[in-house]
Image (cartoon, rainbow, N blue to C red; front, side, top):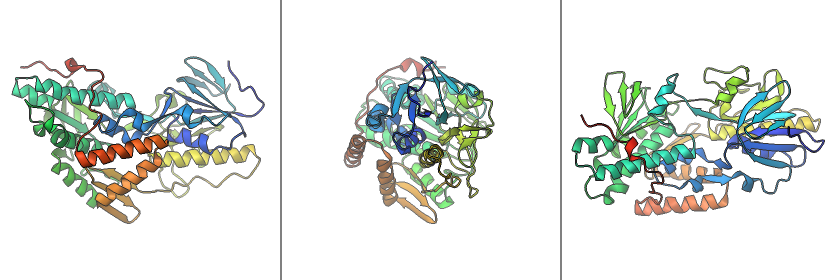
Length: 429
């Protein structure tokens, strides 16, 4: 069993997402010993995963090594490991390689793709939560076109070049728009035997409109822009079944597709349910106004794993800005406690607005009563996302890629790394 070698309090932070990194960056240096644990060795900028999935960006553009972020913090130890269990009584966490004791525990373990109780659907409709997911989608999408180029059967070609995105939130809208542009504008010069502009991209949304939290006018703008890039938008359509290479809707419609991508729901990390602590229906840990877990003042939960209605009655959403704010706030609370100072007032979420892109140089942006669409909204989206990227090299690389694509309509990451075309094929009737 490994313990902190000094007499200072030992804080274990599980998860190097936005919340975990923000906590470590904000916590005063030298006040405690911090161990940051993550199963990956990088911090991932999840909002741009869809651009990796559609060959816009490379994985290195949206990820930064955790050790690089904290290479100047002598009080922070980084461990690449996976937490398998937590003993709340002995304050011990068990990992695959070792165990750790903690004085304080910060859970920033995030969320995973949720299938509303139909977990078997995951075999046929993967989500988009990590780099592995994005690369799998990219490989399958590009492989489908390569297979279609070699296929003499028109019905098989139609099936191979059909893509279904389930979920009309920001991720689904952005992914569907990127796929529409990829098929109609980027790939059209790459293939000679097939017309990639005839590819079909479906966006399935159970609610009556896309982007439900946004103003209806922005939802309608997003729908119209998606239609213009060739996306077949189906609202008020619930998925009732997902099988091998096909989905069935509540109206009986069956859509066959080589690629089905699920962006319709999220749920808390499975580790949260193992703790025996209060959770909401989505498996997120319920927390106090200071982000502590009820009955365990030594444990904080931040980011997507935390279920909280703040001091102003606002349900804190599972978005990157909220995780950043929660991480910084938890650092303030714990630093004040260790210094014997008064606790900060309860957490209040500051909503910096919502935004989503819909293809080339088009976006929707909503900040309070300000609503914007089109090119200037896209510029706002670009600035915000560049500002949130961790590393300077990331910012330069991503900006360069965006400028290159804007001028040339070409993507620079159209590489298939693990071709598995056999998984795309179906038996011809």
